[in-house]
Image: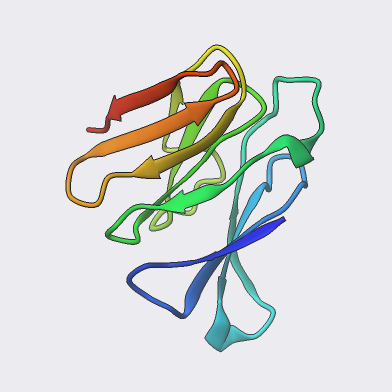
Length: 123
């Protein structure tokens, strides 16, 4: 559904797919067609996996966020081989379209179909 290059290592890229519990897949272009790791979560909503919208890299290239059909922002640390999110933030009342990292502060800015913008301090 989308592809996003890592901001610090342009050999790494994240592919967003609709497969349950493997919604994000990390690849290294140097390894040709070899998936390094997959990340995901159990979708609580009855909506399809294609409702997932827009992943975003942290400025240091170590974390990635994804919105979901559920009102949650999922944060993954690519340094760890854990399939589940490092952190899940209940951010809104409805679907989270995107959670974008602030370029210099430990802050996520999110937007949702509940018509609200959220500011979330990340520790």
